[in-house]
Structures are given as C-alpha cells and as structure tokens.
Length: 404
Ligand code: PMP
Image (cartoon, rainbow, N blue to C red):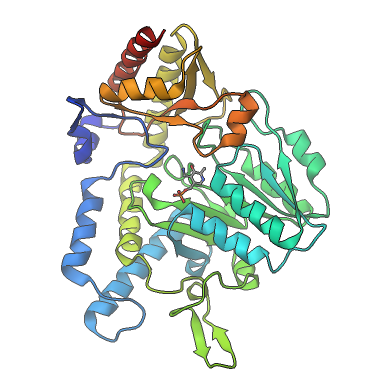
C-alpha cells in the first residue's frame, strides 16, 4: 500500500490551488507532474556540473558525460535492453517515431506494406503516412471493435510477406486500452516484419521488458513518467539500428569528415547529432529511479483501484457514456454526456480546479470511429486519490445541470 500523503508531498504542484480550488490533476496522460527530486536534480546539474559532453578533457565535461551515460545505463536496465548503445536519447516519442520512419525510407519500396493500428496517436500515424508517400509503400490499418480493442483476426489476415513493419501503441492514450503487443510482435516476426511499439502511455504505468517482448523498436517520452519535457528514449535492436541510416547529420555523430565522404560514429552516437538535452537526459534517470523506488506493483495497484472506483462512480451519472471498455485497460476514463459538448464540461470543471483533457486527444480516427467530436478524458496517476475522483464526479454533475 502506498503512503499517499507522503507521495503527494513529493509533488509540490499538487498542493496548489487553481481558480481558488484545490488542484485535482487528472491530465496525467498529457504529462505527469514532477516530484521534488526531479526538480532539484535539474537545478543541481546546472549549479554543479554544467558542461558539454563527449568532447571535453576537462573535469566538468567528464562529470557531465559520466552522469549522462550513467542515466543511459539506468534506462537500459529499466527496460532490460541487451546493450546500452541500443538506448538512444531523443526529445520524446515523436522524435523516436520520426527517426525510425526516416530510416525506413531507405528500406521500403512500392508494393511494401506498413501496418498501423486504428488506436494510434497522430504521432504514430502521420510519420508512417509520410514514409509511405515517400516510398510508394501502402499503409494498412488494423481495425478495432466497439470496446476499443484491436481485432486480432483482422490483423492476422492483413499480415503477409509484403508487410515490412507493424506499428502499434502499447497503451492507447485516448481510451486506455492495453494492446496485446506480445501477440502482435510474435505474429509479425513470423512474416519477417519489424515491430515498432509506441510506449508513450505505457511507461508511466509499467516497466517494459524489451528483450522479453522481442520488439524491434520501443519509443517513449520522459515527461509522462515524472521526467522533464523534451526528453525521451528510442530503444532499437542493435541489428536494426545498424541497418538504418542516421536521422540527422551534425557534430557528435561522425567518425571522420572530409568533403569527399563522411563516416558515421558507432551506436548510439550515430543517432545523437548535436548537443543533446544533457540536463534532461540525466534527470530522466532520476525520474526512473524515483518511480522504481515507489515500485511499479504499488503504482499499478493504486491506479487499478482508482480506475475501478472512477468507472463505478462516473457510470452512475445518467447519460454518461464511457469510451474504451476493454477489461485490459489502464487508468484512463474517456467519457461523454449525452447532448453536451466535452469542451463545455471541461471548461466548467476547470473553474472548479479540475484539470482534465477534452477533445480528440490527437487520435481523430478513434473519434471518427465512435462518430463523436471528442471526449472528456480523466487519466489517473499513482498520486491521485479517491477523494479527488469524488470531486470530479460532483463537478461533472454540476456542469451537467448547468448545461442541460
Ligand atoms: N504516442 C502516444 C500514445 C501519446 O500519448 C503521445 C503523447 N500524448 C505521443 C505518442 C507523443 O508523445 P510526445 O508528444 O511526448 O512526443
């Protein structure tokens, strides 16, 4: 059992008032709040070791390089990657997707197929569309059912020798569905296709084991898991990272440069051109440590309790419909109230101090599937409480009364 009072004290923002009311932060799917250790680690880096990495002989540069590489090692350990050089620092999930789609442009040709799921965030759709436009490959969509689950029999049918890569999120940001990625990875591999997993919404809730999953790529953002914005990780199997060309050219990513020809550095540097977000990379390691200290079993138990309680309390409101009703889901409740626009509810409950997300959640195809403009999404984190859910329920009831 988590000591919630103690945990909440780790997050200074949670004791704030917003619009004169105690903040209830239920927009964790968009970004998580940051514990004091993470905030302090950012200041400590700039106060004590700020220097550029991988190039200086001086002490500070070496300290900064060591801290950066130590963090890479922590993340390698956290996701159980075989090698540290399979762990690339990025600016976030979007960067990771684009790095891979850019690389695949040199591998795909007309007639090849890319499979994407119906449950994706725009950042795991648009770069693949751009890749298909560039190469003449065809984008095919794994459909979903009314519960917001992927239809695996349709996936099986779509797979063929033409399939070169399958891309799917581990957990849907709009509905919270946990996708059966192990099945998808194994099936795709039977056809020789690579698999890219968008783990943006998974890493705040679970510890992915990339070797057990056997995925070829796994991307995530630091800011959704207690880390700073502008940080992220792309895990890639060594064999794939060696096959793909660099994403960006610049300093740090080269072995030798002449005007005739440039040779590229070994992994991971081949994909890390320019001065990175050094403080962010180091502090992402601090965030990973913090979450591991809390413990993912504890995180999951608390979030499941919140999901069950929230689902039961919200569904008791007349006219409220929940979208995403898989038994396999994380602590996200996406809902609408009959005849009321989600934006109107969101605006009223904000005045009551409650932060939720309203809209299409960068997943317009999901909204089109349900024929709705958007939803109200309450996404819970381990630091949220049942009392906060009570406040949400009361606020939604009030908004409903005002708008009906
Ligand atoms: N994929 C999913 C499932 C997401 O939820 C998000 C963030 N909302 C992204 C990708 C993009 O992440 P970022 O904006 O941090 O690059």
